[in-house]
Length: 96
Length: 154
Image (cartoon, rainbow over all chains, first blue to last red; front, side):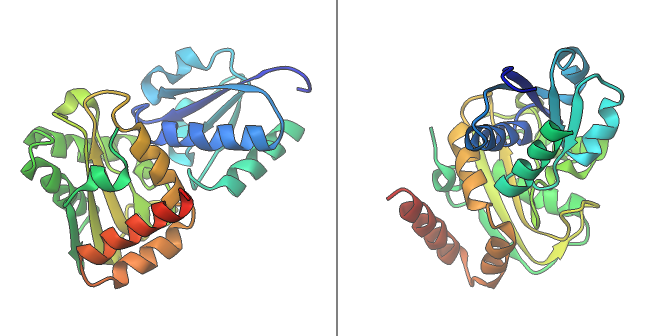
């Protein structure tokens, strides 16, 4: 995905708490990895419509099951605030 | 915008144990209701949302952040902190939960400063939970939070 501006969507239950925390964490990691990305947030009920053209979707393991089959790579995060977990997960996804 | 400590105000309760995660959410919600931050219905909604969407409100080891939507009866922005000394399981990979941080917001902006600081103070959430369950009262908790943010802001 080199050079291209990534589109990342953080998904949580209501698009109000957890996804905003995820977004803050994603943006820190993106900066640390010297990447460029547009990071947006959404709730699970509208997720399917919003993530159509996203490269990466980031959410919890519980909600990932409800998202089902999508074109984007779905990354699950257990600790929403942890910088290292997010960094490892994103690095792995970008390589794979 | 209110910061983490301002958003919590005096809404801190420390208990030894609780029978179920639903009861824990009810106690956290009551602290909000008592101060007129939420309508009584909001508390039921917080529980409903957890059941519907799974225990994803447990966002970090030992910590859960129950909340519902603005339209579910949030009258203003506010946060409560419930410390459960013996912990309670939510059925999450982040169990047991010792810190229940419940919140309500009437819109999508009022709580942003709080969320930002929440993410900072939860960086080592295991350690934070251990500290909080050993504190004797809410003043010690407030002092800790105050010191934490004055250190990282200097």
